[in-house]
Length: 174
Image (cartoon, rainbow, N blue to C red; front, side, top):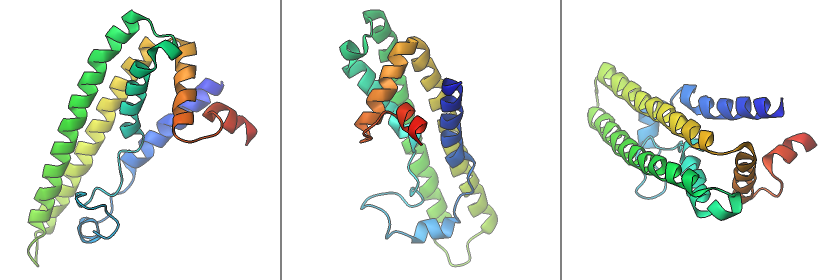
């Protein structure tokens, strides 16, 4: 039951940014003060849990002995990790191009609202497609792990993120 609750909670945390209403394009473009130098406009919301997926895969490979991974499991993980990295690179490039296209549309004072709206929808579609691709890869990665290895991975990830207690125990104490 707790595993089902954790899975539902994780799915909700991932789905929330995907289905949330995007901020107006103009406010994204104009609000440069909250961005780090060199960060693309409209990129205020990071990938959230999807960025952590690379951390999870990297940690599994680096901590193979600690987690008790077999050589066969590592051999299965490495191609998935490589594919995930390629998809992440393509996503970042596609997203940046779409954001530049939106900025180009909005350069003029009286920009075409229909074109700007289509560009915003394109950005949202790129993000949604990427989230779904990452969920597929995540599912593949998790299918390689045993239940005990998955439990160890979650505990290691929660500790890596600075939590004092593993996520499972933290929920029980609240």
